[in-house]
Length: 282
Ligand code: GDP
Image 1 (tube, rainbow, N blue to C red):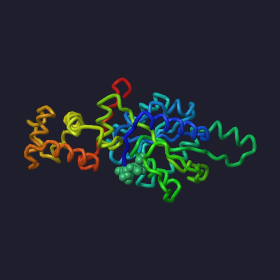
Image 2 (cartoon, rainbow, N blue to C red):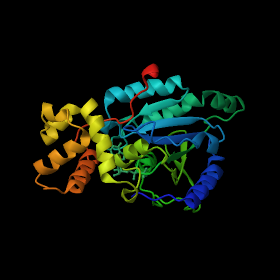
Image 3 (cartoon, protein in one colour):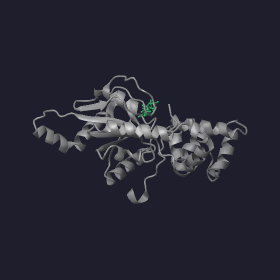
Image 4 (cartoon, protein in one colour):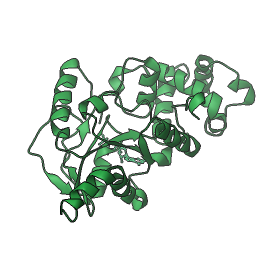
């Protein structure tokens, strides 16, 4: 489920998240591995009053593995610890606690020196809608928590839930607003489901996506929509017309665009990452 954000929502969410983050040792910022840079919230550092952040690139099963690796290295160069995982498969989830302990090693050592034998790490999951916050939280605490939904500004009595030997998580994830200003980022977030269907035009998203796929994932277009080598040379708008006809949708271009977006979201177009690692950093 996605939401629409209005300035009032944002201000309220911002205030609440800031308040709740006061109680944590570590912020678990969840991003979508297909858009690791576009789905980061630029204000989280400020909201978190410079508390340490562990960036979790979730949905790595749907992302381009080569780019996932490049992004982990790029974030490292920027001083950000990032890990990639797939919340639907349990195998990598224990990494979260392990890396959390590494990030907080100094603080934990101090607590041990003071006589606290097994110091607990308190953390909170935050992220833009649909990146997998609830899934990660539920998996880590091993039960189904009543999720309040992706609505900003929803409060209730908060609890700490045991999420590992030494890890405790706040029971409600913090829903952050996405970046809207840049239309390319908007298209990327729409294609991966982080922004509401009501606030973008499917054809803008598909024009952006087709250009990206033509450049980086052309074999996936060839496989799924039988795009020929010659057609790959066509501009995206032209390609939309060709493929709309090919699929028997006559001149209903929107129908093709909506199908393309759904195919991408459901993984039918294979694995892809829309954020390209900057050349100087790769
Ligand atoms: P939230 O809005 O951030 O709390 O996101 P949810 O936890 O509700 O997840 C959004 C959708 O993504 C759901 O349909 C999940 O089943 C799916 N999802 C979550 N994590 C993963 C993942 O690692 N891989 C894949 N393929 N899907 C995931």
